[in-house]
Image (cartoon, rainbow, N blue to C red; front, side, top):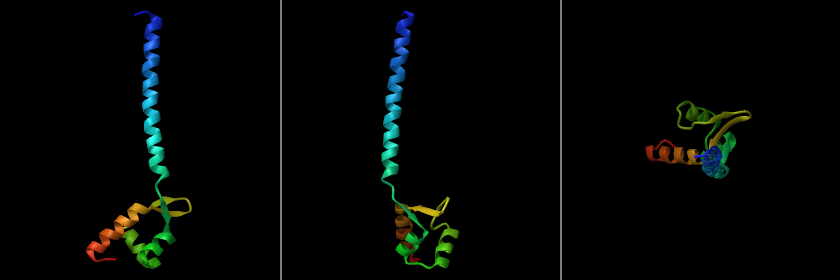
Length: 92
């Protein structure tokens, strides 16, 4: 192959790789855009628990918050999963 053909082949491979990465990035963006976050008061309200119970649930790792600036945040799905697990165990 000539030098220009090699360069054209490399450019084609790079373009394919970039297209794959763009697809992956778009999938991740869609995934994280559709994720609902909850803060501490919303979780306490949903679970109908007091502040001390909330703290115990976090301490016991029943609830696993993301520690972000401005307070704890939870994925709504994780809270619902924890609630269902606790109901099955008879704890909440």
